[in-house]
Amino acid sequence: MLRILADANIPLATEAFGGLGTVRTRPGRDITRAELGEIDVLLVRSVTPVGDRLVAGTPVRFVGTATAGTDHVDRSALARRGIAFASAPGSNAASVVDWVLAGLLAVAADRSEALAGRTLGVVGVGEVGGRLVPRAQALGLDVVACDPPRAEAGASGLVGLGELLERADIVTLHTPLTTSAESGWPTLGLIHDPGQLRPDAWLVNAARGRVVTAGAALALAATRPVLLDVWPGEPAPAPDLISTAALATPHIAGYAADGKAAGTRMLAEALREWLAGQGAAPEPLDPAALTLGAPPVVRAPAEGGGTAWLDGVARQVTDVRADDARFRAAVAAAAGEAERAAAFAGLRRDYPVRREMSGATVRGAVPDALRQPVEAGLGMSVGG
Image (tube, rainbow, N blue to C red; front, top):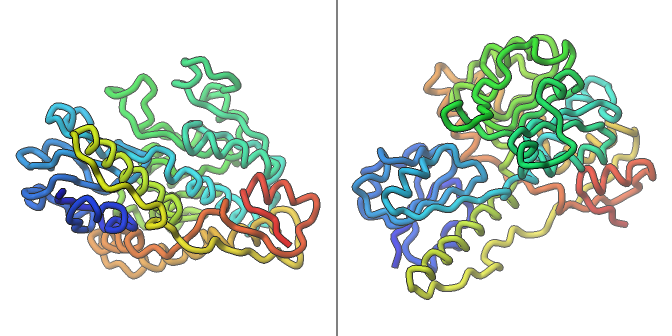
């Protein structure tokens, strides 16, 4: 039987992995090398750096991260030690897209502005950005996209970063965090000068905090809407940046329960596949063990239209205003950097259950002109 240690923020870990051995959970930031002395399988999320310092001299044979991003894992170090690795690409992509669209609708509605007709510049069209493009178009946004690695590989319809920044009314970032030593297209400090964007262009970052420098983020937020879910200086981002941002949330864009459960399922399947390759006959995963209950039902707003009406629908599933309010209140109550970091981690640990928009059904009268934005943009079904 395997000895498994899992980040406490991985949902349904006992249900998914209990049939394979004993499962212990621990807050991800508290996982240390000393705790791995009798562990075969380590399951983490993005807050646990995994490399030689953590796993050297331990019996760990399999590492899995229940996240799409893997920049917190030194995969070459694991390979050198013969440690198997798995991640969950795309598991939370729909959740992040939900956050981006709900955030844009909320900020536009609060400013009494229309969202449709603007040009959205999507930087990075992988799992998240690739799903965002058609949904944003269904909401009436014109979309330009930039992704140098995919362009070099032959993908069509993409523009360079300079052209995107010249054309976009809203710039949204969906790249990994890479340095010049790691990639020919480094993203560390990709946005480092407010002058890179048009004077009135909004900025959205739900990728990695350091893709935007702290100075650029603060300067941009002082002059136009900046929507941030990730931050320079995590887990203790600067209070002045939080207070200046139009929308501020504590790295929870990908935290919809559906996406987290999908990440758990992907790791459970990868671990079973690895065990089978080792000659074992693991107990099959019971899909019913990872069910989340009934999807949400949304009531169509009785009044309004356009951006405000769509915001009224979206906020019933993805309430970014509530996330923002909890974050600001926690930061205001924190006495210093250590308390701010603890509050940040606590908000993520205790995040309330949120479902993906794609499972929701809208009941009530949906205006004909908004049916496509609801179905193809928000991804919701229209019921009776």
